[in-house]
Length: 279
Image 1: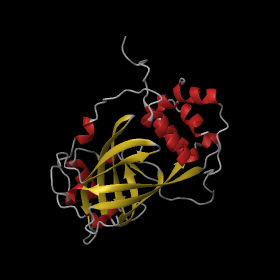
Image 2: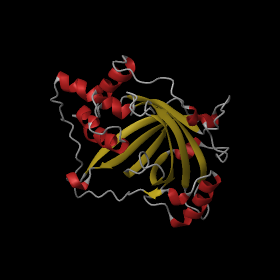
Image 3: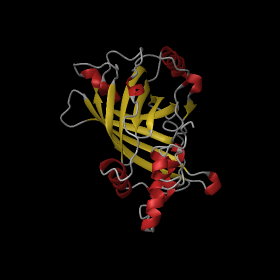
Image 4: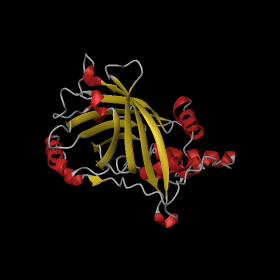
């Protein structure tokens, strides 16, 4: 069912996120990793230009203390609709075992993915994790000026991502605690970037907004382009997640779902057959 759902997305990112929210499992992740990356059952373009991931910002916090991230944060505002604007987003940071200086962090991720009202509404809940390496505490070359980075597999496919802390408030004065984060990364689907605001409350306090706007502007961004994230998290309905979802798909259907028109490979690399090339 997960592959069937992805096959209907035809490369549209928001649609694929809903598929993973509804049908995501270790079996689906392992199948995608096996067929696309490990054994290259389907040939996809290689050597893509991922240099945009390494473009930095001129306004990154110079002396960042990763221990200031420890605890729970709400994502209150986001820039990229494909990655930043899911409902009920909290991130929880802990210092990784054996990394007492905070040079490595483990991040827990919670979010909800809406099901369109046209097909019944409701939501799926996702719980994910990432491991962060804090470059700000490490000696050596850091040409991007990134604050920290993460790499691994998400939904079965490899990703790399650089994080930049553009500004922050420690909450000790009149301005509530917040952090402004920008990121750049890539997957087999290409480069992506975005930005979001962390706060200790579900909604960014009004008294923090002027400082956030200034930080964002110094990085060449515009706070008016950010959208508020809905962290109200109503509980009148239960999550739609179906842990017992099966596939019920034949071998021929699997092949069509992988390489057929609108199939999984169209989701990973839209235009891989060359249909978008100029003639």
